[in-house]
Image 1: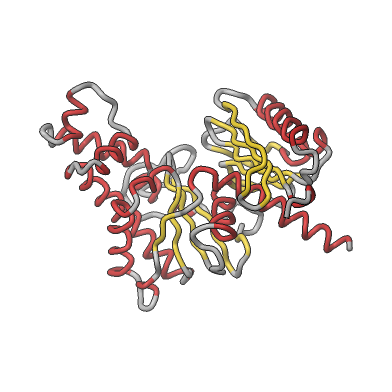
Image 2: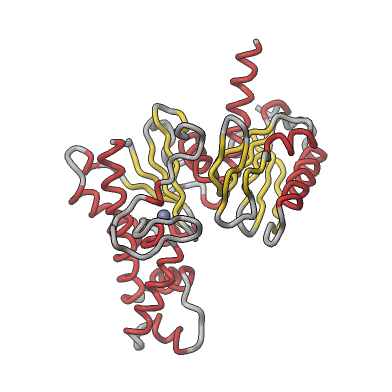
Length: 324
Ligand SMILES: [Zn+2]
């Protein structure tokens, strides 16, 4: 169980921070986090190399590196094609890091890795067909189909957050040219926006009083107020959760998954978010897909790191079988 060869390095590179760990399954032998904000491509590569070297110094037996990035990925070439929240474009990040650290490196989309983590160790353990949504600043998507991460033709697929739930809806976020994507209507960003609107129209609510006191009404504030029982904030979650559920009903119809797993920062609201989503799935999806469970992710904000380490282990095993 504790053989050094069973440990791999997992990196979750986010828009604001990098989380790195040396893991055996979900057991974290070493862990670190560093700010990633405001760095250019070269600085990001240097940051990753520096952190991998620190991880190897602490745990010399670590055998491979998995790297999760919130970007569209060319999986076979290990290239980060484009990202909304990081200054990356056509960056051959796998080869760049591999050349510096001398370990096999595998690169994937961060939500794909969250799906792999929840499938391997979390809420969807043992379920071969899984739809994963990570609801944070945006909405990331990941698919496990037939027990494998589904990546599309080149690795950029499963962008489930960009399914349209309102054809003439608001413009989507970042570099998405579409309108009315579920990401634009049910992300943490949308939660904050709807929360501000609700606070303005209900000045006597807890949320309205926060606004009057000059506090910023963002997704965190709405979640805190809802969990404390503020009816106005709970109604905002009803709206956001039901929008999410409209998308989930389509995913249930398309994939007939064993479960839809919802993670990301907004899942802190738990059933306040998920109950309205479950209701939409029950009412909108075809039978028997209307019985698809909508589950809360269980691995929290380390899911990306755990999934990255799991990817490294998985791909290392494949390489060994191919060579053996
Ligand atoms: Zn979009």
